[in-house]
Image 1 (spheres, rainbow, N blue to C red):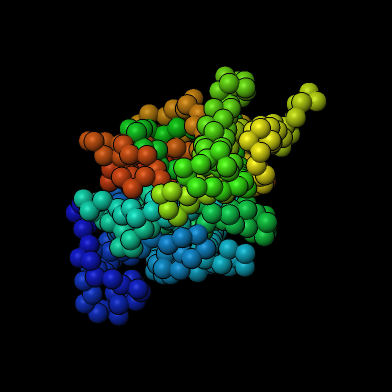
Image 2 (cartoon, rainbow, N blue to C red):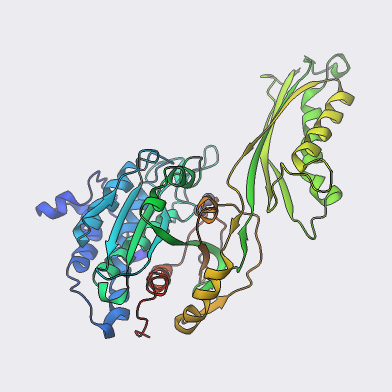
Length: 452
Ligand SMILES: [Zn+2]
Ligand SMILES: [Zn+2]
């Protein structure tokens, strides 16, 4: 990444000037890698490892472009053009359009031999930073758009998947059947994977299994984690609107003191799992992420307040067990009781996010032994559970799927968490990511794996 520092010249159409031979500053970096890529002739059996190694620089070049041009969900227009153009330069000719997720890039690679169809998936979208935050100036490459950043690593996943496509089209003899390269928009917002699933695109293509990786800050480079069952929690989002009576700040007794009521509710909601639920066996995390109460002056207590946040769990929070109210109902009861005591009205709404991501145990068994034989680093088959959530879960709900974590930490880099502006990854991630995705494609289609 450091040695691929961009010159800062913006380029809306990254490939075209290169193809026309125009001297464009930015493309020199990206383009040199791609020319090397284009120069890749079909590899022989012995040199697949070499091909993978040769693809790391082009993958880094793609990463540089994507990282510098972050785009929000369903607006990944530059990423779409970049990825599509690169795939066409590799020789891809078969693309499927999505009407519900129109910025998706879905490319199909046919080995020409009978075999299963599998999909490899990466995301395309970036994220808004916290209010007034920008990516640290020490980062290279760095977002060129204030307030937006690829701080969930989706640029890394997409550039690795692009490089994997370049490797596999030059090595068709190494796999059977077909591989679908799915560059999916809008993982961070509604309407990415759920749209692809709703549109039945993978179903129509006959996809039998799907694989994805996600960067894992703090996990050492060379380590991959794969759970045999549940991999990630499901998410729900709540919004609590409290409606009370305002007053002069000097006389809180004349109003409902709504900000204080909201603060108490925020604390009770956040602490609820630890004190009222069996979190040792069924983990639940409730976090308040937005708190708004604005009197627009230092001496006014506002009438209303808003508290929003997320509920994470592996179970469905709308379903109660053994005749008990569901978690969603319990929280509504908590808020109702507190609102009644405080003499305020309220609206309580829960919007479902992605369900829990559940790996397929049979596919896990099929993949894990050959992967263990070929993976040169640490393969952790019992990774600790986190409460993160992913829209990859929509695929896991309709077909066998595996979701891998891959380490990005080395030499002090790759330690900051995703969704923070400090997030980064050690550049060795590209070589490891290419190896993982290529291996999954070959094993997943039961192709030859004699290149170790
Ligand atoms: Zn994320
Ligand atoms: Zn992510």
